[in-house]
Image (cartoon, rainbow, N blue to C red; front, side):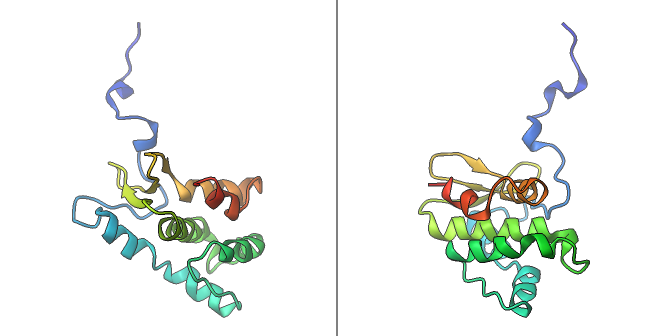
Length: 146
C-alpha cells in the first residue's frame, strides 16, 4: 500500500483557505465575533444600496439579490469578490433566522455555518457554485438548512 505525504492532512475541507478572509486563534474565531465581522458585508451592502436593493438579513431579500447576481458578476467593482460577499450575506441570513445556527472557522481559518444538526455549510463555496452553474438559487441554499 502506497502512502503519500498528504495522508496526515486533516481532510480535503481543511486544506488551504483560498479567496476568502481566514480567521485564526486571535479570538475572531468565536461564533459571536464571526457573526459580528462576517455579518457586515460592507461592500455588498453598499453596492446593493446604490442599486436600489435593501439587504435586511431576512430570507426574502435572498430572492431579490439572486435576481441581480448574474449582472453584478461582470462588474469590475464587485465581481471579483461577489461570491465572498454574497456567501457571507447568505450565511448571515442563515445564522440570524435558523435557531442554533452559528458561524464557525475551520482549522484553516475558512468561515462556515454550523447548523444545530452538526452539518457545516461552506456558504461561500455554495454561492460560488450558484454563480458558475446557475443550478441553485440563494433561497434554496437557505431553505436546505431547515
